[in-house]
Structures are given as structure tokens and as C-alpha cells.
Length: 128
Image (tube, rainbow, N blue to C red):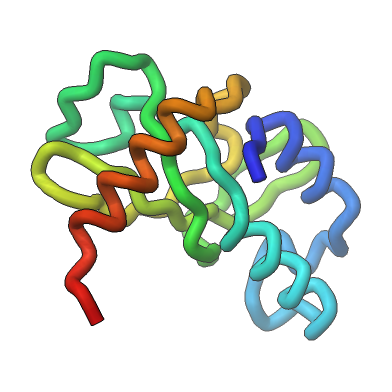
């Protein structure tokens, strides 16, 4: 599921405020919804957020693998601590990082970039 910052913020607005601020305030239903969304999105991650990245694009492709709670930050509708955990392919191998929703790109990654990112990440994973 390709998503922009705006797409994800629209979804977050509909969640209970407590689910955006701490895991302890997250109901089972909200936790299930967050897990489903955050593990199925493909987003643009600004290059400056990824250490040692040498991409030719302003934004790298990040594949959502979960969420966590970090430092507090402001969105237009709330103060939250929820961050999206993504994995980004780099020349040094996959990098996992947590990104505040306000830092995500507001442009969808192209299908070609997403496909290349997926290929790079699957090639970097050990065979099971």
C-alpha cells in the first residue's frame, strides 16, 4: 500500500488520542489497526534521515515494518509520540529506523523505486 504523509495523517486523526501517545493507552482494536497499517505501507523517507545513504533521489523508499513510541512531537491535530518503523535499502545494507509521521514525504514512491527497494531488501535477507 503506497502512502504519503497526508494519507497516514488522515488515518491517525481517526484513532483515539491515547493510541497516538503511549502503548499503555492503546486498546486492542487500535493496536491491531496500527499494526496492520504500519506493516503494510510503502512510504518516502527523506534521504537526510538515513545515515550513510547515497541515493540519487530526495526521498528513499521505506517499507513499513511496525511502530513504536518515541519522543513527543506535534502534528496539526495532536501532540503524539507514535513513530513508523521502516526498513530502507542502502548501499551498506538495509537500515531500520523509526520516523516521526511528520517527517515522511508527501509524495508516493514510484512503483519502480518500490520494486527496486523490495528486490534490494529481499536480496539482503539470508535464505531460510
